[in-house]
Image (cartoon, rainbow, N blue to C red; front, side, top):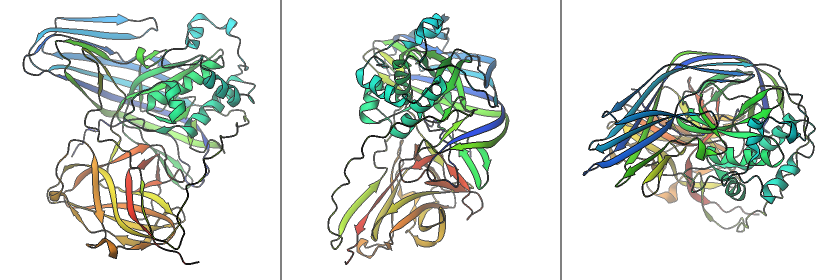
Length: 555
């Protein structure tokens, strides 16, 4: 059964190293050669009464060449339903091409169906830049110096932004070192969150959270504030995971499918080089499809206008791979940042700026008292409408989207958590979406950690029959209990435990995840195809919620 996953972002392309819990920059060499047929199906739902006018402006896929990456486009075809009154190509000051389509007197849903083939070739070698830092803005070409400008979303002139960037780059003598130091800080200090009310750099710095646009805007603002040209890139991310073999297992790289934002940095001796602030340095992987660039995401987003009212919008992205040849090998690791990042080149070491002081730990009740507890990834969104942000008569595509794993197939999936006291488990809930399987059932095993992987000892929940779960268009909590009476729930010993999702019969479900690692060590999520080896490390945290009671500890 094919599940079309309009999954998000960002997810995070952060690499995970199977035997090191500290985090690292992983330097890869090798090549990737891929060809994929991409489909983008956009629908405007026109209600009773129709529309007098609807104009839709969307970015076209673009060709791109960098020292590591070549993207070419072929066989592009766009179809419209019903037939529009006009279709035009519009080019902006950044070199982007947008298609502008207009309907008048629209009485049925407006659809734009786009198909094209993308060839992506990556050659990851030991290329480095010799550019010195600080840079001389007077010697930059105008098309690079343009991307030093502040914008309302990229507040590079703000004192807080500049103060942080100067502190982070104080040990750098090369541009490449300054960029690495800034982006290492970003990936360690911003947590993925969606939906988000605002995408600007200052809000991201203040809250420490956001989606791919927030990561890109904060990173670009920090770099521009110290004189490094940087621009925001918009396009698509594709959801098919790809595997990089390691000494002990493999990295499973994944990213949600749908709209995505990343960035490019200008080097005088290399030109524009792609980065993904959440995921990778000096390149982006074979699941990124580049479409447009700009000063900020307002320059790259698809937009529309309508009267007398604005229709709802939906975009479904599909991908069929014709070639996916991945030949990479790990050549070097570095001990920072804390979260893992993939890199395409060896870089000079940079002194890392000290982190801000940690907040004081919360006050806990005495250990000889019972304490009700609830913890986990509790801020997951319901995600019914994630495609558009709208005003009265204008709208724009957002980069908020679902991130979920199809978890009722051949693979088993596990998520770790840690407790520091004995705890009675009353309920564990997973953020999931039911696709089907009236006769199917789900349950979870909670097992002790065994040398960084799920072990064999643990407890099993009561089964959850899917015919008792009401269908819901988004994601919601699926509760799993361990006894009919919560007072008789099992007691877990202090330490690391794994939640393993199990299924039977025709159950079909997705488990919602958060890109990046919100809990404990970077290898908190694992999967296996053979039952017990759990050799695949995943760059995400599944959304879960644990409820129970910490048991008294007599002293």
